[in-house]
Length: 267
Ligand code: ADP
Image 1 (cartoon, rainbow, N blue to C red):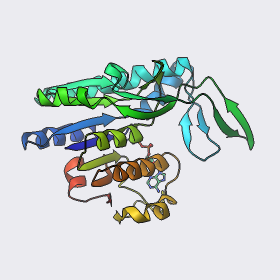
Image 2: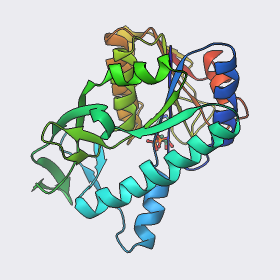
Image 3: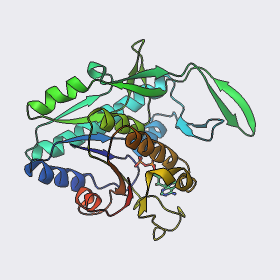
Image 4: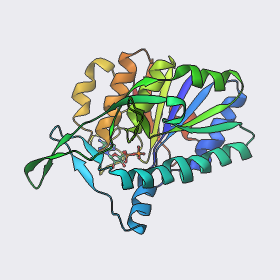
């Protein structure tokens, strides 16, 4: 079992990701695809006159401020434009893909944060109208139901809170908990960088491999949204996934290259 997370940043080659996935499935690999949509959400938010606002928590992690209106834009892009684009591409390649978000069938369930403490212009503030949280439970029987009947799940945030509210969650960590729940051997996290870099500005500074016990040390190189990928990798490995690979989604055979070890392999 393979879980592939493809990001939503600029430069991602969705055609290549889908073609590679179709090829793997022909070789009888079982796979679930998870995707993001951050860049498109930023573009649509601007167009709709609601520019994105990124919150920096006191802990240093960043997240998208998601009030109700932002959540609706988020769903238009993630569950609409990107999810259906991927499902259509896979269908064209003969893959019977089914697109679902985390709220469908309570696929990804978790806690909505009642408030978050942020730092803005050096000052601490409390934000309460934010629909964000983190995934704690996966409806694995639903995924198995699809897989056992020959469908390929294509999954995307939002998740659902225990109270039934849609919540914006980090896609990398959602993919990590999914991979652990499905006891996947490998979690591939594809984005617009070759892997974890020592220096974000230098693509040749790739860290090729990281032993799980040294992940804390290497986590220091991750800035911004990369921090959550490292955290997700750690969570997946600690919960039974054997290998996590951060790899490039801009290349011709992104999944095949990742499985061959091109990228940052954490195990
Ligand atoms: P996605 O939407 O594909 O999940 P993100 O934008 O969340 O991708 O994360 C990938 C980004 O993380 C890269 O484009 C890069 O700018 C940033 N980044 C920060 N620190 C690092 C690092 N040490 N190595 C690689 N990328 C990093």
